[in-house]
Length: 145
Image (spheres, rainbow, N blue to C red):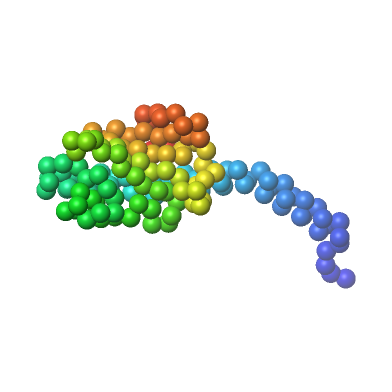
């Protein structure tokens, strides 16, 4: 007779289960880091569009969705995959801004506790915040790296 005994099958399933339990946190961490690229790319795009808007109108845009003539960038306020929501905070005089990408409530990044929000400002300073809500300047290698 050929085949597996019940004991051999239980042993193999136990080993697979143990390996899965050990590998899952590492896999989740890698997936979170890879999806952060979406937020970084979106903010860099906003930065580029802001500079183009400033060159044309001598002020930064204050809206994501509005057309350029109405002081907007004409882009969606949700990233392509829906993992981050984008927003702008522009000074009253239009001479400075902060673009923010927040984890979307329905997005896959909701469990990424170390990098919940990203921001970039007029001078290119990159910041991030974890679940605690404290903004930190990115020194490279953290959320932006």
